[in-house]
Image (cartoon, rainbow, N blue to C red; front, side):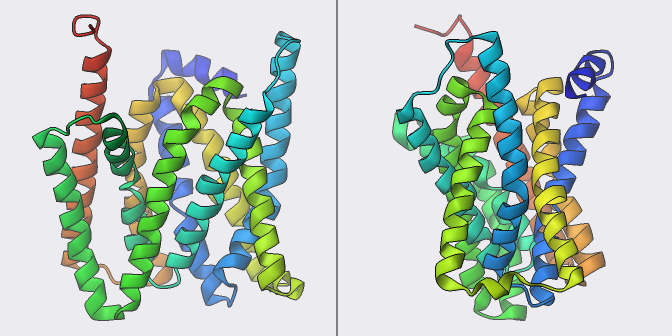
Length: 321
């Protein structure tokens, strides 16, 4: 199915943009579903546990199929134990730590602010990489970064006046999630190149799922997994619509139109979250929220475009030494 979509996209690139936008929109529902679960009395850790219970078997199956496919093409293919251990560690950062901090932060802040903070993760990827490789940042990159964080500060101070000091706790938790996910992205790339995205995701997600379930077993009674029928529908939506489905839609979009174009179209996710947060959750959306969101999105869009241009320039044979 995905192969036929990629083939058709060569004739009609709009299909790739549509699938990328659809994937980003499904990802944007995560905060809404968590908020609805909290309203239903289901805690963040219980929601995260159900997410893993539902999503991990699907990711594991896809990963096994990917491994079998590579093994059929190359009988000598194998994954070193050291790489498996690294993948478990990286998965723990990206699928356990980042997810747990994000879910916990949503107990204190709005879905709108949560999504906008998470959108700054690519900025941390560049900042951390620049620190590791001692690469200076251009004035344009710094300006776009400051614009994004000034927009976040505008929404933060507005929400602080409405919801109190809990906004500080929630914002710091979600900021920690954005940083953790940035670290995950940096560490994951060489492992994905080695074993393929499907197998990597399978191992990473499965290991994180085990850790989530262990934490739940030590901190909550098993009876906490018993939820209302409505909450169970929310758990199913979390595991499929907000997790598995967008992951593969975005992967398909990258195959169709490339990672940069997919990242750019992914900038619609905060707009989807804002629309759902206002219409479904009844969250406040004032002129201050509109101004702040606009600054964040413009700053991130400029940041990614400038960084992408710099990356392409560095790859150019004319400047390589």
